[in-house]
Length: 263
Image (tube, rainbow, N blue to C red; front, side):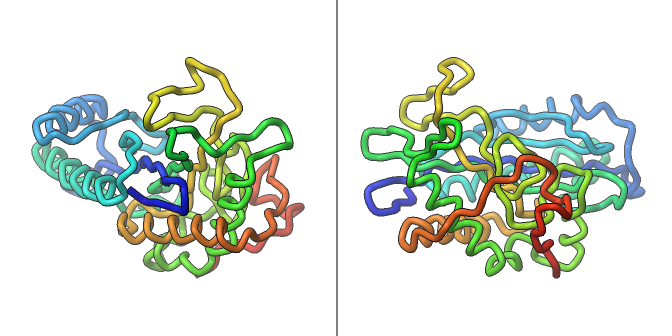
């Protein structure tokens, strides 16, 4: 478990990647066939999967891992997923590419970490109701934003990874937060999953939220990414920095005056 005082950080992850032919070109293979084979491999190895999906980029796919209260377990599952993704691709005479921006004019690939805090009763401490939000959610968002510049070398581990931070491709370009907005670095999706109770707002609409941290590249080190995010959460809860206003439009728009990520 990842503990913060009297609460626990509950984590989940999504990761995107591309499939290429052996000639390292976009492939016309049925991506669903690949995902079906990956699902079989995951079941054989005991890897839990929340979802496998075809993504927006040409030859791009995505996998989502279910929530857990053990950061080490999530890291191990991410590493196993990448291993199986590459092996399944090889079995189909393909290559799995986890680089952040393999095509300049197409979508990049990210490692999105989802998180919320729960108390000892398994109650989600993140809630938002119109303009009101819980102190825990406010402090964690602010802490993640303040510490984001410090941890950018972890989220974007090489110069090429910064090419993903461009507008128009559902990737963040600056340290920002907002609601169900895919252009911000920290997104608050409309749904949540509770670790101990297993509820989702799709079945039980509520004010509860989770943070989707959308900055890390898919090629980033999962352990380092999760460690950095947990450090940001701890900083926010301890120091309680001021949270800036949310972004309601495109976070890349110059009207917001936010400094872009730079290498």
